[in-house]
Image 1: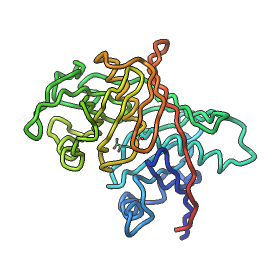
Image 2: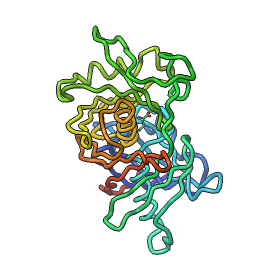
Image 3: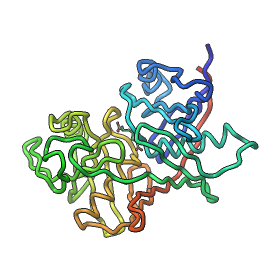
Image 4: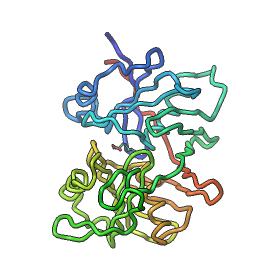
Length: 279
Ligand SMILES: N[C@@H](CCC[C@H](N)C(=O)O)C(=O)O
């Protein structure tokens, strides 16, 4: 069977997009996704994203497999790419700019902007230890500047769920963090029963943060949208940044806002089509 795909990226966080609108089950297994994501023996990507029929009154459903085959609840860069992909698929019959997408993290709403960027209503951040989830604090408490011992060092971590789990730590110099060795130790630390995405943040000013990330199930990536949102929330909670800031990632900048009005997080950034192909 031939399967068509489109390769997209959001600031270098890259995905294989599959038109799965005729079935509610992904046409590929997690094992097949792992093979396709391989950068030497496959197409190469950080994950595979499926555009499925909508559920619960939404326009579409997004499912995603990480490059290790695990299934995360949400993906910020991925949902911008999905919005671009859906607009391509709908072509001339498209009659809206704002999609309501069902995800394992709830309904997320990406909007295609006139300048080509995609602005996403990422929903409410979740802050309680049980919502992350983490056992580092009592279930009903927030995890803000909590000490975590790892690699012979104490890291003060703040945890935020954007549907998927994030652990944020503020550092003097992001370039000096040995991500390859430290990242997996955070990801598999026993206080995170569902593993964790870890963001290292350097505060350049109250509206400009530099970020590097180790992603659960994908390792080092050039950008992480949910991670940038979680990091801004962590920065506000620890009084390191304003509610609106640019988060600069290795792949480029994202604009993030934690709205004072509705307490929801908004992310704006690009989604770029790279090529199409047939498996
Ligand atoms: N890169 C994504 C996040 C993808 C999921 C993540 N690896 C997880 O397992 O939670 C983003 O842009 O948000």
